[in-house]
Image (cartoon, rainbow over all chains, first blue to last red):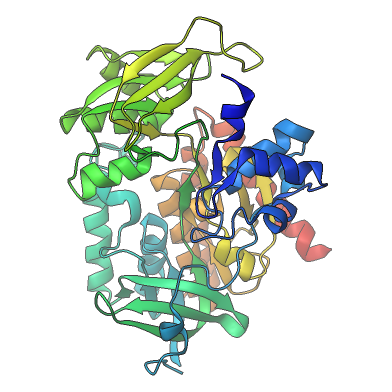
Length: 95
Length: 371
């Protein structure tokens, strides 16, 4: 299979980030999951990296030999699951 | 703000077991579960478990699930269903998005003395051209569809991965009426137990060892899969490509612990490939480096339902002891018995690696607390 087809493969479905985008971020100096996320938005979507995190770690390993320890993970932040503003601050808010 | 003594995030085998053990001693427990029914993955485990009788061999996961739920009911353990923890905050406060109806949600804050993280694991993805097409899904997702929701995900299925999940799910999809076109395994040997694999080969299902998925083809959804033999350097052997007509590709490429809650709780995480990647380190009581936050089951490193149950019990006993519901002599006796059973469960295939990895978590905990 040619490289072009492989580079077009999506890594982060939520934010539509491809293999080529991740490789470009690595070229720009990204060395871990967080710096890839900051440059490409991979892992910033609805699933918060639950799907693409391992794929980004894999590309980092294949491209520049980053080990899992160095690659890190997609930093979990609040809210960890999608929640509407209405629910967050709504009249039913239970203090 | 709602108050409780012990809050369990996730009502799977680990969470339910933690709750039961603590509630039996008198602890007031609330379990938060994301689904419409608690039990985690147990209710799709329609097969009988392996191991010794002590470890419930010969019992089906669904029966263990019903049993645990009944015990929770008898012990007045509160279970919140359709409820999502959106974060763990200072002073043991947890925020929960509770679904009241299709359109109505309520955010409830709970202040608790003890937190048990029993969130389980998520499936690993594999990327190849076409992997985002409808019809390509996790093996665990396919199992949930078929065994829990009773919807057959497809009629012609290719399974990627020959670990126990890949093998068991293939067999169950076949029982549910799907044709298993084949099982693809990049390693030279079948990864899971031979007893599972031979059940499939007896049915004439081909297991392609040394093969990988190259591409999923299709427009609206997947209708073909291309596989090929792999060279030692992971390139494809020229001319080895096989095109298979499929409507579903299921991926059984392992699991990784869900670490979101532990990270937010400030727990120290370490990476170990034998436990699925990043997971919190913990002590003999399953308490993480953050005081009052405990972890059990796949969230503390991917293993299986039996170890999850035992780790959950450890949390329950330790918490009951810490809150003064169990005297330390009795608690120590119970914990010792549980650790012995865990040691038994961690024997056998891949057991040495898992035992070593779990040992490392205990050591890293000690280092972190001393440092």
